[in-house]
Image 1 (cartoon, rainbow, N blue to C red):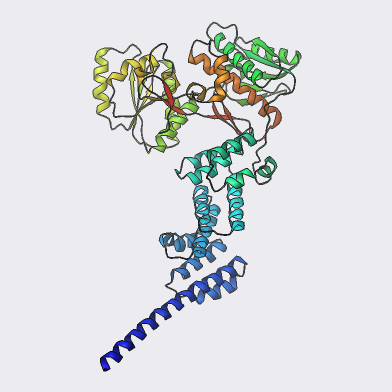
Image 2: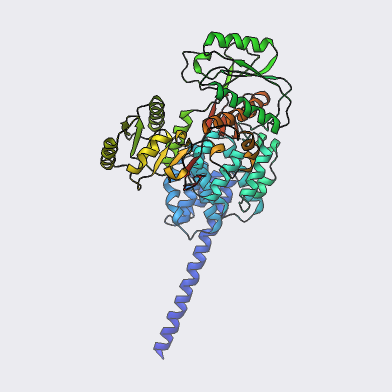
Length: 539
């Protein structure tokens, strides 16, 4: 009998212990929630009283102390206390929400925009109140709208999370030339994104009000007026490019049903003749002027100016506004970004000794230095490379720790050397590879290259009219100039309707990012050769 009473007593104590533990845990959570409410109301003194009531070893005490530190702007203390708690899966939902809210605030104050966005999207997963979710969406939008296009593009490369990418893409859509159309494209692409309702409710006015760099919806149209082209139409080697550019601009005017007349002035390639033609075009009533094709015509001392240049016919001096020409700098940047995304450190460049190839090498090395301090191995071969050299080339490449091989070659040179390359090493090149001149794509099978969307994205229905208009052009080189001419209509519209505003234009030659100073940078895609075609590369 005493043994039975003893068992009953132990059983009662056991249940009593569980009950006391449960009550204690409940009290800790209740004390935390009470203190958190005080903190959110701005009552710091009372919040410290609540903190003192929490057991010092409890994760809730550390969390609440971190939340107080975040409220008071003590970033170091916030990270010290809160970062280790991210792995704690036992926190109640409001506590976990406060953890990510505080970390998001701390990262934002630190200027770590990607980490701030990451924490704000995590915060939302612990919210149940629709009004709180709506406030978080507004907070995320405030963060993104304050960033430049280049910042947003850089952020996008830091994550594969579709929620984060969706928010960043929405930020980019709001900076496009046609905001409404871009947001509609976003809605179709992210049909199950948490921000779908937010995106559907967006208007151009709301977007502008929440942004410190307000995007402006620019309709692609021009006022009536003559468009003057000061290009080398009569030049033996450059005349065909100038004509292709004119054809592209004319095609874009036709697509938009615009009546503007194009008037041509044949440049002679020097600054003095260009200045005379510029003055003549103004005298003859040109509302818009595009040119020149070479830097020397505009300013012989400015080698950084990329042709073509969009000019303001009303300006008395320093008339250029935007430089949107095709640039090796943009191509090199795309290749470097590809290498960075894939954590590439060891690169060899195989280049011919031609002037074009050496310019490609210089452009890549300059871009690479902005991302990495790793040296680049450069192997130069003669343009008329011989068989013995090709055999030696294979051994030379094998001796290097290559993670990627960059070809600074023409398409015909690349076709000649490809059989001697290691197929296990990813190979990439400039747009010069995409000039096969009758050869089949299989000749460069699996080689990646940078080029404009018009010559890589053959599934884009928006390009179909332009493909018909450019069908008679004999080479991809001329088609690039055609596409550039088409994109200059959008640049003219941007210059005319929103001077001084940051903007992104999705064009035939890439995504054109116009900064507040009117300078243009072009984002280019990578493509690759298959057995029978060219396809966009999504690697």
